Image (cartoon, rainbow, N blue to C red):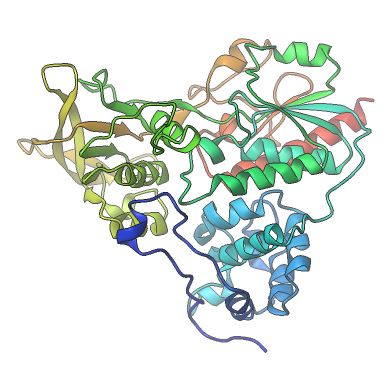
Length: 463
């Protein structure tokens, strides 16, 4: 029987005043009964607009119908047929602007909680050792995938399913890319990423960590070693800065460095091998999801006051509404329409505060957002001991600098053809943040899948 409730089934969360002191997962997931109740809200639309809104084309009405019937393993198999990382996507994808944003139930109420149900199916499969049916014999051509983030993992999964012998090369010591170094444990437990990677290993994918392509070996050397094609999914891990006075002081971090130390190197543990400044007051500059992650991590690292400093208003913030809501619940202080102009020195080379200037919104800029305009005479200082800059990233230039035939645009992103993945160098394909600049996990996965399809077509036509 259909559930015609206009509101979605709520998901339990850890209490804000408890969770902001630990790194345990915030969202606690659905029970089986809650999942079946929520899935029954799906109308099974004939034209399935939700699937059209999914970058990896998950067969959403089909898996929701199975969940409503209590057939959780079958539902997981449907999801896994197009999505290599369902437990990840169910937690971090911006469903509100993709599948759920297209849901018909959202016209006169709340859309079906597709992301929560995807997460439930993946968690059920993990708890019950249900791995799906991706195991295949790898007897086909060898393909190299550079980077083990969402683009690389999605590409590797599809290539392995097609019988290719795939090796994923990862610069860091753990596979997962941004999923392990960038997204905090309380949003995406690392055990879940490891499980998804293990699923790919079971499907025949090999992982070579601590291998920096462009340093350990070049792309041309991969071809010489027998690889028929190469997919570049190396992401956009080069941080940008504001270029304001004081950025060289002790206590200034890029969000990438800060989150890597916390997430991958577990700086929050007492005997952590990587140091991090445990400041009483922290300013995080930026308004995206990375800024929210950094601010919430700083709070959990013991900071009493954590400020989000953003030059536009809340409506203009690119972060997900859910992340903004959680940050507010956890005590993060929002200083909006406020732009940092300098980082202050305590006289000993350490951060003593930031100077900020009040802003107001003027005419729209080229991207359609209203441009922030400084209000003269509105400067003030905010006392902090650490500053985290979350103002964007770019692709690392190492690969294109060591690979003849690869070109980049003015933002440092690899140039590709009309299909979005074919580079100017024969046999080399690229996708995800290395091509688009910093974007979402699911868009990177979509590019990885497109890359796999293009590689299979290339190998077929170049025997």
